[in-house]
Amino acid sequence: MGFITVYGKTNSENGWRMCDAAQCDNNPIPGTTVSIPLQRGIPNTILKAFAADLNAYVEPVMNARGGSDEGGWTPTNSVATSNHLSGSAFDYNWSDHPMGNANAGWNGSVLIKGDQVPAVRELLAWYEGMVFWGNDWSTPKDSMHFQMGYNTYNNQAKCSDFIARKIRADGFSTYRRDTAQPSGPVDPIAAFQSWKVQASDRQLLEYIVDQLGPGNPFWKDEVNGKTTREKVFGA
Image (cartoon, rainbow, N blue to C red; front, side, top):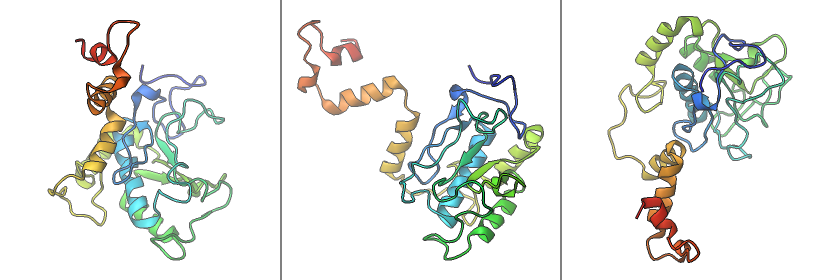
């Protein structure tokens, strides 16, 4: 599918098109193994780079919940115009930043002792309006929530220019980093985690087959006269 109509609406509150799961990118936040589905293209690129910066410089995504209290695209929502329906918003460490109170929970982390709000503000300013913080709504205050900025959908050329200037090919921004992507050896664990998220069902099945090897008893299938391994590889 791709872009769809949800609750009778084609666009969410910030202007981005409503979409389904097939239109989302499930790759992890750069530098982590935490996956958040976000709309492919501009929203995914900008918001995941922003989440990576939060993780690196403000507050680790791996909190007491172990990276399980994050969310991006959702198929349904109690708010018909929610930006989660368009995959253009994500919630970050929601158990630490409950909705309702301004700046909720942004009062210290292992990276910043004390008030974290100035660091978030600095990051938002660096992103040139590409990202909006739910903490800045008049009501409700939603400090866990970050989304594509207002009027970004109608200014995608500006978004693309921002990406070209400030986001590297590896998905990280250049905020406090070199502009060039590191040329050193790739972390094999990080690379494998990324591959697992992107791999098709067929690729995952072939990987399992390869890891188990031809002599594994799992392959025995006396009823059908053909091993599972043979079924996978067509032998």
